[in-house]
Every structure is written in C-alpha cells, then in structure tokens.
Length: 181
Image (cartoon, rainbow, N blue to C red):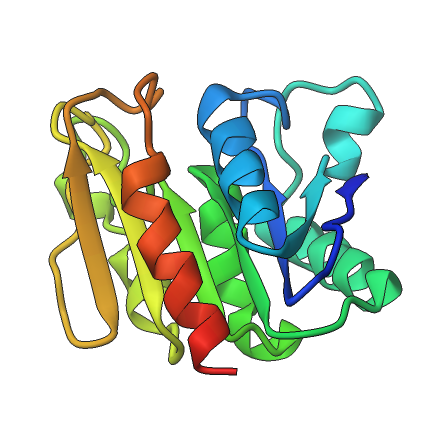
C-alpha cells in the first residue's frame, strides 16, 4: 500500500490496480494527483498476488477479502471513495457496502471479456448503491457500461489502457463527494 497524505485531508480515496498492472498505471497516478489537490488522502493498494510476484489474479473472494482488510486497517477519516482500474474497479464495486464507501470511481470497468458480451459483469456495477463514476475509453474492447441513476459514465478517446488525461472527468465528481459530506 502506498499512502499519499493530503496536507489538510477532507476525505480519503483508496484505489486498486488492474489484473495485469500495478499502481503506477497512468490513469491511477493522474487520479491520485487530482485527489490530493482536492484534499483527499490517497492509498494505492497492490493486491497480495502482485506483492507475492504472481501475475495471475487470485479468486474474487480473496481479492475482496484483502481489499476490505486493507481499508479497515487504514482507518481513514472523512468520506471514503473506493475504486480502481479494471479488476480493481470490480473489487471496489463488489465491496462498496462492506467498506462503507461514499462513492466508487471506476477506471476502464471491464463490462465483459473482449468479444464475449454474453459474459457480462454489469451486475457488479449495478449492485453499487452509492454514486459511481465510470471513466471508459470509447475503443475499450471490454465494453461500455450504460448510464443510469446514480452512475455517471464519462467516455474518453482511448482504449482499455486509458492512456489519456482523465483528470477533467474525475475532478468535478470528486469535488461533489466532498460537498455531500
């Protein structure tokens, strides 16, 4: 876990990485910087399988348990926003109620495996009962989630890697999480 403390914390943001990547992904570091500027303390969490040097993710139950344990151990103050990129976004969605998240930020949510729309993971996103922001590339082969009440979907010109500036999509949404405090 990489903790970045805000000078005057007004909230907390905990982000997880994608299945094949790490916490140094461009979109995650951009969101970290935006959140710090807005007064969020930010924790970038590496899943145990990555820390152990493995490339393949553990089963969802293990990912979720590790995520919940890390958030509980952090003891962060203020409104808590959880999220991540791709697989990390899925973990944040599945555990939002358990962690007491006030919002979930999803970068490149994998709606379905590429070319397999019948294997939808949309139920994980639909189950979240707090405000959700999804920043999704227009060329993402993992699909595009629909907008719905409580879910903002911002499309950016990118593929699943989101190698573009996502700050304009994230900043106003994070500000609104602090105003609802």
